[in-house]
Image (cartoon, one colour):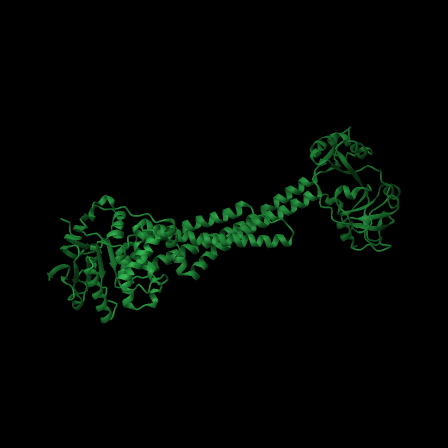
Length: 225
Length: 400
């Protein structure tokens, strides 16, 4: 049996200070391959910390995180980087696109650290842009396209490496409602194609569109539907 | 899948270069200005070294043109400190040495020369009056600038030719008919002015008269004080060794033999010592340029936190982030260094060509300039690169 794509086991996170601040309390969570999940909670509930730990950008204070079955506690920083390069894709609220490079180069940058040669990066970037419906905009600068299109570019960048899981942090946060709805629809479509996607949001209306919803409050999972 | 397969991919050279040039490409003006500091420092150093080498090359070429086969024989002093006169027969004896091709002598006459009898006798202008052999000019390598040189007839008459400096000090720059100067209670007519004699500058401050005239009018005893000897170039050293004994067999140690071109070469090389100061100034400029690059890199790392965070999320290792910022600093600095070498060489070329020197830029200058730029870039980029790599991905991403 294949292990879950992402598994959190009694994960806590404490930020040092006086007094120390525990922002996650023994979180248990498993995401299976092919799932489309929303993690929903108000601001300050520990969503962002949870995303950092799920994305191996940060390590838990205690508990176990497994990505595609690999326990990250035993990995050094170099190996974690390689794990992110090959198995995790990120989508951020602020897009983080380079204004000085074309849409295609921005997407291709997502494959840079996986050791893919340049021509193949470009080719796979073009395919990813096709999947998000921006095949005709490859040579545009990110400044010349709309916010919704920018987020689709960022999604293409996350997908280009065919990661085991895509983590999206408030992907609709900087968009108006119709662009946001389009992004949600696109994520559903990509999920139908087989991508495993976790969306973190504070917006219950957005979360309502997803088949599985995990509600988080004050650092604990309070409900799941 | 197991953890063992998780090895970060190495960036290919082309990818590394692209990543390193992101900052340069996206902030061109800033990059150009910070590279300019390095460029100015390197240009100053290259130009200083290039100019000094070119002027040296020019001087040496001139010395070569004048010939390095000239030897000077002069009277020295006895062990008791008295003047040791050269024998009257010295020039003739030297002429018999096989590799010697030309011999010309001058004899210092112990009198002073004045513009007119009205000049107080204390105003001697540090001029020498010398009796000169008729073949002096080709032997020492100079020519007549104005008028004529002495000939067999004028050598017997109260007629003189002025060295370049002597003419200047007497205020005579043209040879007009009837031009004359006052030597030992008698008018001597000026028939010519010489070009500067680079190899034997003592000729320049002299007033030259013929040997017979010096004997007749200035009661000169006929003993030569300086004998100029040209020989076959590759035999010059051998001739040098025998000249003392040949010129004065009775007292060979009372004869001073020298090679004027050696002194000039030494002086040409010593001139290089003055460039040390300018080189130091160039180094200071380079250092300031390095501080500029470091400054820009520190700011760059602060501004590009979100880029660093994104790259870490995309899978860049700490080492790759460090390498990116370090090579960006080196790129900036080396680009500045290359521009500086170009500017320095151009400055050298322009100046050297106006002076008709050969353009010489020592390897040390351009290779050293590039090397210094590289080293400064590496040092300047080290701290910012380490800071960029140390940044935690979550902190980097949190900043907007």
